[in-house]
Image (cartoon, rainbow, N blue to C red):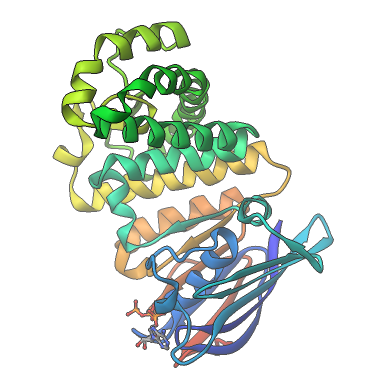
Length: 361
Ligand SMILES: Nc1ncnc2c1ncn2[C@@H]1O[C@H](COP(=O)(O)OP(=O)(O)OP(=O)(O)O)[C@@H](O)[C@H]1O
């Protein structure tokens, strides 16, 4: 699957633009503040309903405009899918093949994108929630019932935490504790399976991009390692630790505390790798994710890279481009200067003041 045509209206400085992409590399060249990231942000809106750099849609919609609109024509084995999103401050309308759709998840399942941007480094150095989101994003694509189990767990966790906040609600604690262990074994199992899928692919990618490092990853389930993760053992665990949860007024242990441990040998990568190496580890993890999508789904994922030339030196840029070229997936890459790598299937665009044209060199 690849994006054949993209229409963007009122996303930051982009007023009304239409781009015809190729299935291989699409390189967007432009100066700072020309609108490169806004293009990738538009695709993030279409795929996930959210921007990857702002949590407030009002910042993304062009000043003085009521809404942002992004439409795309996807080519999936020569049949086409038309999808679009119209997002205002108060309302989101989604259409797929002229039909109104009420679930963002459906839009996301048609257009799985992986975005590598200057803040991707935080996947290694930032909070555990970022690494959990990384695993869960993939689990969501691979296991059809992961999302509903995770959503139910979030709801039950919230109710249990309400109980823990005030003694007048303690009477319901046992009920919510029993419900809290229903979905956790499967959530943990799916996450473990996801991490096991990532491991060999990450190994393959880092042997090309970072051959000098011994990188290994391991899931921390959210529970101490010596605890069995079946429902009964988890229930016994929660009962034995209820005094701690009561003291802290929240559920201290559980699948909501899971993390992906990323190590170089025996030490944490965030403590021992250089900044450039950390960027490449983050990129490798993101590439591993898109390669898994490519293997598990009939439709290929799409790779977006923001500001490649500022992210990596030329040697590493070229290693990465060769790797992407071998994956044979569509990529949309922004850069402030033309790339030196000889791309075989590529289309170049120039962007200035939010306006796109074919690059003339
Ligand atoms: N809501 C908005 N409405 C209109 N213009 C906006 C809005 N938000 C930001 N801008 C403008 O859009 C442009 C942002 O472009 P963008 O961030 O896409 O640039 P870029 O080419 O990625 O830049 P850089 O290389 O510096 O990262 C800036 O000129 C900014 O002032």
